[in-house]
Length: 363
Ligand code: NAD
Ligand code: GLY
Image 1 (cartoon, protein in one colour):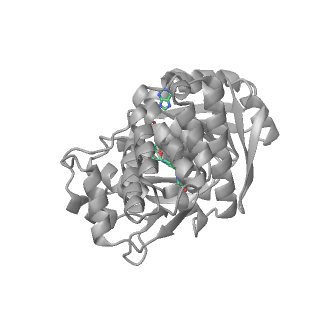
Image 2: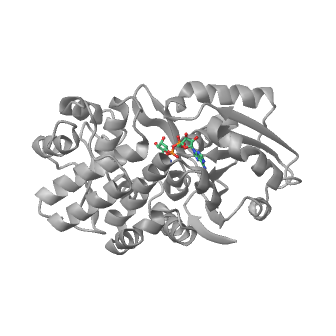
């Protein structure tokens, strides 16, 4: 089975790539988890399609397998749902030897990981990401957590999994809208890493849209490689890892203000457009690069504007973001493709101009 190693200070683990769930047994074996109990956390959409398949594939690996499903969607990503997980853990005598598995998208993985990080002061967990977004981003790197009172991922921990198991076949059942949202995080790796990767997506965009297996494999593995490198150098986001937040400063604010009616990836797409606007006006990105970037987002059907957002409200919401330090906003900008940097030196005027480019009323 193909694998990429993630080497952090806390833990070294593998991301396994597979078609189908059969080889998950191999991963469980390699990680010495055989014979324990397993508690699978999934959501109402993913559970009904894949939970039984995963259970079948794991037959004989675990002493017993428990399954808990929550209502799918970002609106479930809160402490109430975590509290439900804890109740389920208690009722089923989940102990220190139990492994928690997050089977689903980023919402599921972030919450399963947070519950595993906190229950009994930490039990082992594994990530089985099924959305594109989770396969290229959220399942790797150990950020786990929940939203709280309108602030995205404001309560959480860094807690690395024992392994990540990517079954690329799960992409087949993802809706077009969710696939596109995942593509926003994929496209993000272009500006922050290299024009070459961006160009690969551009040159193969039709095949990507058709979810061509070879293309998707190349894309998912490349994103995981980039993320693994970044996380290996800066696990706890004290510097380099901030580049992964490209597009998230404004994106998170829009996501919250819109009451999670827009998807995370859709808001990241708008946030990236806003960040490109700042870079372009600073002369760090050419008009051609700016337009090319927007066309690719549009090609995948990602929104470039949000209806009914008030720039003042977006601006205020940005101060409730977890990236704010000493009341200063933090932005990831570009000096060009593959040259991202994090800065708080962005003027109010630049920020409002950028927000205006994504507000529904702008031309
Ligand atoms: P999600 O978990 O809500 O999944 C999206 C939707 O697709 C859900 O309805 C889900 O049920 C469904 N789904 C998932 N896989 C499916 C499949 N194979 N077939 C059919 N339906 C499927 O959202 P997401 O887009 O996966 O992740 C977004 C979340 O990830 C946000 O909460 C964001 O904050 C978080 N995130 C975390 C990190 C991190 O580093 N931890 C990074 C990026 C994003
Ligand atoms: N998606 C941001 C990070 O993992 O740091």
